[in-house]
Amino acid sequence: MKNSISLTKKQSMDFWRWYCTLSSLFKCGTMLLLLVFLASCSSVSSSEKSRLTVSGVEPNTAKTASVEAPAPEPGDIKVIDGVEFIYASNRRYMFTPYEPLNVWIRKDEYTPRMGENLLTRNAEETEHFRKLEERIKRLEEELKKMDAS
Image (cartoon, rainbow, N blue to C red; front, side, top):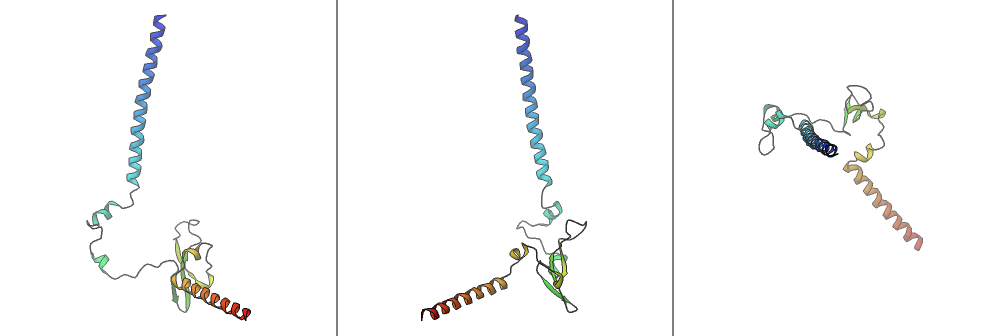
């Protein structure tokens, strides 16, 4: 009887040691995998880090000192041989391999997507709408004055 009790106690202690060891190894392994994942997701490559100065500004080099044409932004318009082109999002992006995010599209073939007009509103359009709203308010006030008299 005594031997059977001591055997179960010994077996349970061995299981507890095994569980603690496995638990600590699992925690260390998880932390190591997390550390490797975070290090691999760095947004600035090592070559870019070496070019940055202490202030965070790139030093002047021949490449950055030369005057370059600015990259087009969505909504930009250019005219080639009397035909207007607009720089807009590519409808085939992510459906066809090697398609860029934005492309030059003929303005007569371009139709904005549902959310594009909300995202690409420029100051001229908002100013135009503000002027129209002021004019409508003024006309409504004049109409009320005419109805009151």
